[in-house]
Amino acid sequence: MKTIAIVSRKGGSGKTTLAVHVAVAAFLNKKQTAIIDLDPQASASGWGDSREDESPAVVSAQASRLTHVLDAAVENGAEIIVIDTSPHSETAALAAIRAADLILIPCRPAIFDLRAISDTVDLVKMANKSAFVILNAVPPKGSLGDEARTAISQHDIEICPFKLTQRMAFVHAVTAGLSVQEYEPGSKAADEIKSLYKWILKQLK
Image 1 (cartoon, one colour):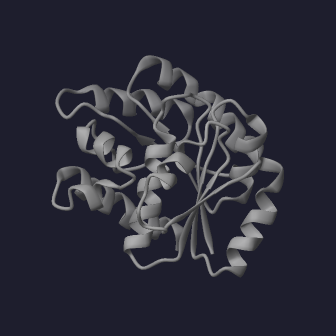
Image 2 (cartoon, rainbow, N blue to C red):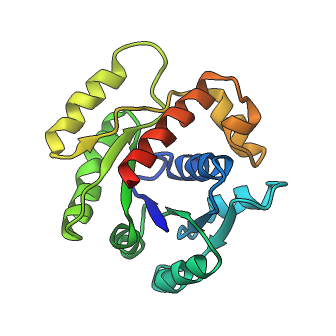
């Protein structure tokens, strides 16, 4: 089993959107997949409740129960687990980081988000792990994405070569309990998720 943690100490960075899309991409790739929702706001769980398909399964849990939930997932044949975390709980973030084979830090190309990266990077280093920042909700036009990459490079952390663009397809898909691959299979948004997932698989190997 491989575990992917989506972590950011900044609220509104797009953790849940990224988590559910990575999980569905794995599910569509015929992997037994589950999402563990450690966020008390339970956004991923709400997405799962609005979803007609029972897969990927979404399990709401407390950080103190993470090891138990992961063990149960292994027993049930899970191949890929995606952990969605709370921006306000250092305990939950650290638990997810320590359990992860791959850590992704979503970040919007906005000044407050860029300034907040250091808090998350400190947690990753505290756990003696490495992570990738992935730019999220990048405007489709303009240089903001490139400027954000330059700003992130100052934090001594790797940057994912793929980004998620600001597209309404992501909003509509999540509202419907879907991913963009299911909502608009031939869209640019779906292509972005496919490329990101292929890259994720390479990192997990």
